[in-house]
Amino acid sequence: METKLTKLLNINYPIIQAPMFLVSNVAMVKEAMHGGIAGCIPALNYRTLDELRIALRELKVAKPEGGSFGFNLIVNKSNVKYKGQLKVICEEGCDFIITSLGSPEETIKQSHKVGIKVFCDVTDLKFAKKVESLGGDAIIAVNNEAGGHRGNQTPEALIKELSSHCNIPVISAGGVGCKLDIDEMLSYGAEGVSVGSPFIASEEAGVTDDYKQACVEYGAKDIIMTERISGTPCTVINTPYVQKIGTKQTWIESVLNKNKKLKKWVKMVRFSIGMNATKNAATKATYKTVWVAGPSIEHTNKILPTKAIIKRLVS
Image (cartoon, rainbow, N blue to C red; front, top):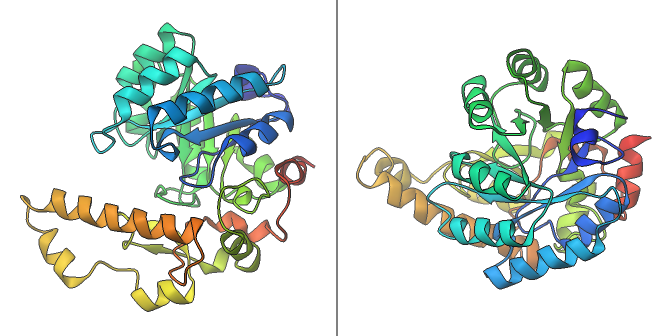
C-alpha cells in the first residue's frame, strides 16, 4: 500500500492512528508503529511539560526502524500550554506534528528548523490553500464522518476538491473502519487516512472498559451531534444519559451566546464543564456516560489489541 504518505513517514500502510483526547497514549502508539502505521497523541493528554517530555523520550527509544510517531497541538489561544508544548516537542524531536484549531504558521516555522513535518487539520479549500502557502507538509481533510468535531463535507467531495487544487498530500479523516473504506478514500485522491474511533476499543487505550464496550455494542446509527460538551457540535454515542441531558445548549447559554461581549466566556465555561464530564466518563466508573466517537465504530465488534485492529484495517 505505497502512497505519498507511506514514503513521507516511512511506514508500511498509509494510516495514521489519530490523536484522541484522553484515549491515545504511549502504549497505543508503540503498537501502532510496530504494526506498520504511524501513531499520534494529543499533547493535551499530558498535564505537565515534563510528562510530555517523558512520553517523547519513551517513544523515541521504542521506535522501530521504519516507525513514525507524532503529537497533536491545539494552536489557538484556548491552549495556554501551546508554546511550551511546541518548544518541548522541538527540543526532543518526533516525526510529525498535527495542528488543530488555529493558524499553523509558527508551528511550521519552528518544526521545520529541526526536521519535524507538519500536517494540518482543515475542513475546506480556503484553509487548505493557506496551509500549503505556509509550507505545511500535508493536509488532514476532516470530513462529515469524523468523530469529535467534524467537518461539513462528505469524504468524496472534500478529498476530490482538495486533491485537485493542492499540491501537498491529502490525508482523509473520518469514516474509515475497514479496508474497503481505506480503498474508497484512496480512490478519491487521498494519500492516506487518519483513523481514530476504531482504536478506542483497543486493549491499550487509556479509557474504561465500559467506554470500549460501548464502541462494540453501539454502531453508526447511534452517533449523534451534541452542543453540550464544548459549545461546538461534537459527535457522541447516544447513551441513555446523553438522551436525558439533551444535545442542545440550555436556553440561558443560547441567550448569552447572542451577546457579543459574553459569548467568549460562555463558550469557555461550557468547554470546561464538557471536558470534565467527558474525562470522568472516559476514565471513571460513572453513570454520566458522555462518550465521544465517530460512525466508524460500526465495524468494531470486539475489544482487540491495537495490532489486531490494524490487521483488520489492511486485510
